[in-house]
Length: 155
Image (cartoon, rainbow, N blue to C red; front, top):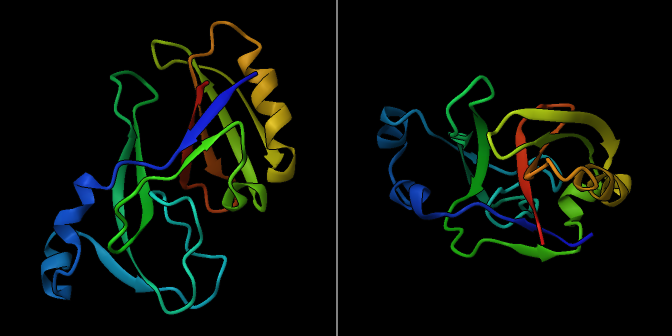
């Protein structure tokens, strides 16, 4: 089963790059500096920020489809991130090293299945969930903090 995991488009976040703390606060965005190498996962690059790198913590609508599962949550975006990651039939290290919640959605953005998996076992779960022809896409969330991590589309 072929699949694609892509980072989110940085375009909506560029307006915040380089703003003052006061200007960010007015937009309900928080600038943070990574203080370790595993707690600050950028959703554009699908990499953890290195200690000392700055990120923006902001609210992002990751499931904009109308309906009961419409969702938004806090995410990190590496300040200055420009190029979304693209993984084809490959699991990013950022996902492979965490406990994940995987949610399957049909073309109407209705959840059809969900499970929790260690990131090292994510690929077989992707195959299992995409084995259902009704599944259009998957959303992955970090299970411990619960934040949206990435979308998985059929390849």
